[in-house]
Length: 238
Image 1 (cartoon, rainbow, N blue to C red):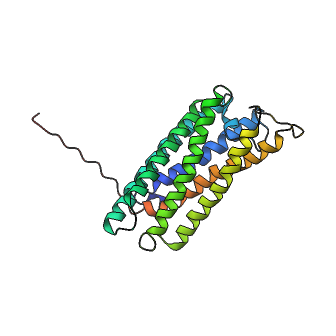
Image 2: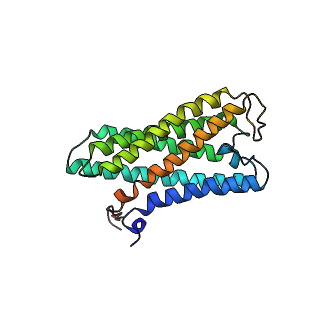
Image 3: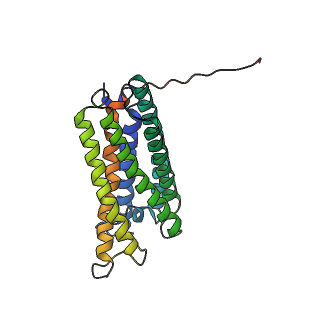
């Protein structure tokens, strides 16, 4: 049986494939439509102008939902593991979930408020998504080490921490360089004064975004042993 068909593994698998498709499809449509430069546009640049804006908005909204579902399932997995054999304070797991869900809300804001239409709201949502997302991966990596070796292999822990470290290292220059750019626009000329800031922040943005994708890919094995059951109870007389 394929690994992503076991248990709840299809949830992070769907999140990874859907989010990757969202970025790639929006990028391809934006470039073919001549709306952005093929060389290192911001992710949001590829979802600003119709028709790619509709594709980007729809797909990122669903990615936010899948992200929330994945994070909540991960929270319940860690909670159950911790009840079986205590390895970490439950507060760490709860804080991680809350930050992750706030990051998903940020994704929804990014999807629904285009950067040229409402730049302040859009940038605020992006800041929430990236900062909360990076902290989420870092906390989950710490939890993974605490639950090793009973619930995670040392290799998985190292991979998660490496992705978290790269994302943390990339998110700081991404924010710093983006804040130094004096104007928001889609097309850039290499001779412009803010071009270097744009390139650096765009590289970091794509790095962090795909860092999230590869991080959730490591959840697939954990989710294989999880089963979802829905029960219905009716209280009172009918």
